[in-house]
Image (tube, rainbow, N blue to C red; front, side, top):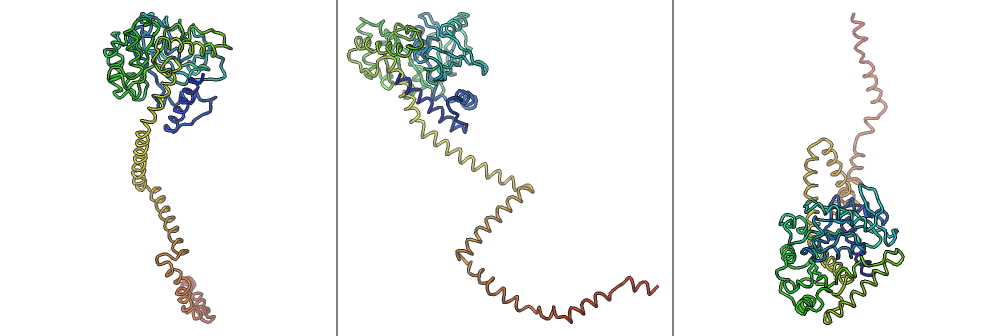
Length: 417
């Protein structure tokens, strides 16, 4: 779909920019997964992180499943997410629409969405845990994002330490998921308070009003949702982009599993969701309805965050450049302390002198004309004034040779004996 494609292109651009800033190789699509893992191990970029926040049963996992394109995360109203789940996504266009590849220790294994979901359910059934469950998946539809599904914000395990561990990253998108029936009490919603604590200006927060179908007939809830979508809600919500979606009935779990028609079936379901929302929210703008709007909003917030952070990134690069220059000066001073360093510095000075000398000679700058005049006039004249004829006269040469040949101390010593 067009929305997913746009998010995928944006994600690829951010990944490549992060690799360039980290001074790493930017590989082609075939090696992009290797490059991504290498990049994340050295300097992970949080621009592509999406962290879901919300109470138990708010529908966080179902919404993340929509972004993945496969129902791999367990869902349910009784708190299916009992531990942090991190899913690192990468895209492989060679895979079929329903194929999912699990990457473990540099090895790939093809799995089904239901098998992954049941495996996660078995692990989560052991009880609440602070230990993260990490999955690295490759599909043909998902954009290269890192999705993090946290336990319900109203659960005891979600203390300040666990929240800060994930939410404090300065560029991660905070996905605040609020059930439509709780929209009238949005001001006291803990997930929103967490987002405002770490993102006071709302530059990396996206609000999602979930389960709109459960609010049908609830005039108070529908009015509160309308106000949020029109940026007319409580003051702490006005600077956050909001999107409304309905429940699990139109999520990807209801889409047919046939690989040939999976993408078109999913798109049809998402379009049907928009039509249902139009009937529930007659005055809401269409660009804020449905999962297509959610994907567009995620891409928009990432793009805006990049624009906002770009001046800081450039300033940081300039600061690092000055640090490198200062370090080179220090290294140069230390280098001169050794014999090799002295030779290197002397050769460098000689080259600089030669370049400057030739520049003055050829261009006549400074007193270069005096040097030329010395070699063309004074120097040959002084050579001519030397008494070379006297010194190289044949009689003088014979005298010097005879005097030198006659001085034979060893012969003199023998005669004396």
